[in-house]
Image 1 (tube, rainbow, N blue to C red):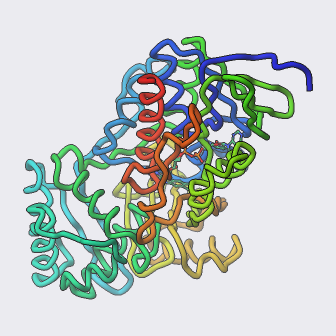
Image 2: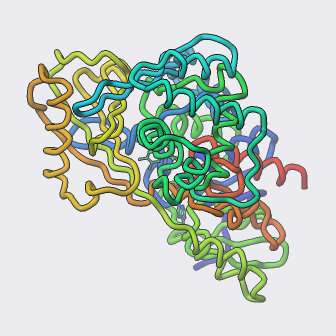
Length: 448
Ligand SMILES: Cc1cc2nc3c(=O)[nH]c(=O)nc-3n(C[C@H](O)[C@H](O)[C@H](O)COP(=O)(O)OP(=O)(O)OC[C@H]3O[C@@H](n4cnc5c(N)ncnc54)[C@H](O)[C@@H]3O)c2cc1C
């Protein structure tokens, strides 16, 4: 390769939501940046794809009101896209959850528009489908968490925590386990209690708005990656898609990143890739073994799958809610795309983490899910079309003690930074974790 042909302040490797968040903060503060992304499009694990002529997200994403930094970022970039108001992008509603169960009564936690924590207390008090004993044991545990009466000296599995806290079997199965899967995409037995409690505190006990459900009314790419690209380029940042970082070397005060077509030089490098790619790139820089501990930790993360089954029904089907939960079935959540993204008759079924569905091929999974929906919605006709998107490494496993190995943004090598949902944000793998990580990383670079 010839001499380096590009020089910049900061080079960001990876154009997921963490990389974009870092890039936006840096260009907004006058830094010159390059962002390189190995894929054709930006967005990483939160992007839009076209399957069989239908434009869908690689998995239906949802936010809550506590995602304050993601909301702030969306507000910052949306004027750079062609939407007139934030209302065109997001649908916000007071927390209410509805679960249908096979051969059992449905469970409904209604929206109670009171300040926190009375909204949550009210929601459980007026819940339908839960026994008085179930309601009481949830409320007692909620009160203990709110009053900080629960101290966990060491992290433990969420299932064990709920048993210790005398939660009934039915409440674990119908309330806590679906919440654990929705929040952490990790089986309840192995899930970190520390992370779960942190999310509950941030979302359920801070304010009523923090627990709101926020749905996307546009495709994921239209929500952030497309307007973010416009924002970054209009602030003199450069984005290079289809450029995989192959190696990083150090020359004097600059780092040099090699891709198949370029050699780019920068003072700071932000590795905004998932842990395995970051570990690989750091290995080349680890001539004196000082990165050994961080590389070892990066290689210890394990991952969980999310399967999304898209079913296209005739436009006439009626579905009363934007989001519907199911208990005791392979299908876990259904999102109604008619009311959300204006795609009539389209629904997406989300199946998080482990389960027998991982052993099924796509036609069997589609058949299973379609039969389950036919039981709950007997008037619906057969779907006209269906397809499955399996994201095998959708999120890192939020397992017991995972917080101990999550790295800081700053590494032990000067001006080499890490960003991504897996860094030590205290959040599980979420858009908010990714956005916060990118933002904090950029703020530390600016502070230097
Ligand atoms: C199906 C699914 C459903 C989800 N649902 C939700 C949800 O409802 N709510 C929620 O908050 N979160 C959800 N998540 C999680 C959320 O999408 C992620 O936490 C977030 O997108 C992670 O962003 P990131 O920037 O940290 O990583 P990534 O999105 O993985 O970005 C890393 C980027 O780096 C690029 N890259 C890797 N190696 C290189 C290299 N060598 N050179 C250049 N580029 C490279 C990759 O191509 C990628 O674009 C879901 C995820 C999935 C997959």
